[in-house]
Length: 82
Image (cartoon, rainbow, N blue to C red; front, side, top):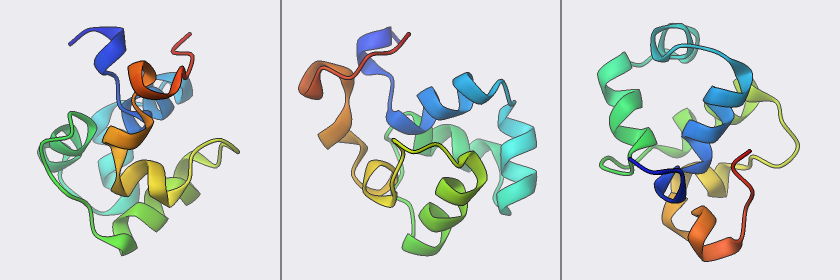
């Protein structure tokens, strides 16, 4: 995966310096499922999106970023990944 393919969810996790296992345990899903979400290979329920946004608690991450990551990919929106 290149930085241009980084989803907002993965970017939030990397910025928080948390592991997949730490986040998954906190929000109540498997680390494998979270990895699939971060890669855009799985869809998220609104309830899990709400938990993830609350967990990261960063102003720029919303439930829409989690539910529709393709709309907020860096190459589509100019979002900075550093």
